[in-house]
Length: 260
View 1 (tube, helix red, strand yellow):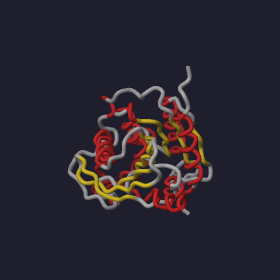
View 2 (view 1 turned 90 degrees about the vertical axis):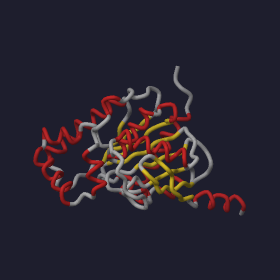
View 3 (view 1 turned 120 degrees about the vertical axis):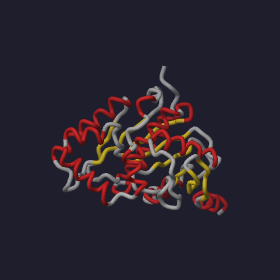
View 4 (view 1 turned 180 degrees about the vertical axis):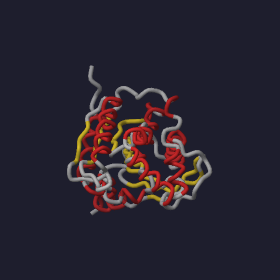
């Protein structure tokens, strides 16, 4: 009975606001007290609620931290820059303010995946591993404009008509600050999970371009990739069990002694 009560208490999230250069950021923290802490970063337009499909399974076994970036969920908007370096530094400050010590196992979806790669490059000594779910490539928008102009025009139309000011700021700044970053840290285990199901607006030309960008991700990071054929872009919603399994494998890799 006592063990059951402790388990239940560990899964009740501690919620609050962390102080960062981008303002107060709402967060949730739950799971048993152990390291590395799993740190979730959502994609464009999403707050921490996007992780609800995997939250119970993850917090049953791991310490898990998720936040609302400024302008999403319960976090007020900000006038601070929205480039990936700023976003990564804000996450780092939020973790410190919430008293979540490193090391961190970083999980990022879509644009949040790019943000987590930047975090790992800025704070390699605090990064235990990286799981990327359909991550946005650093050259995604530039490549679409050059190779698939019709898709780029559709996306720009969405940006102009449907995106919130926060979304537009993140979208416009997605490739900024990247050239001056430290290199990818060697020895940090990482995995890539890609979706295998495409929507009606994702043309063959777009899919071909996306395949090349995905291959480039693998080459840049030097890590394995897995395509989940049943899933659309939101892998953590369409195939939550695959995401949890990939995270468990990554944790095993992070815990393994380094090869000599």
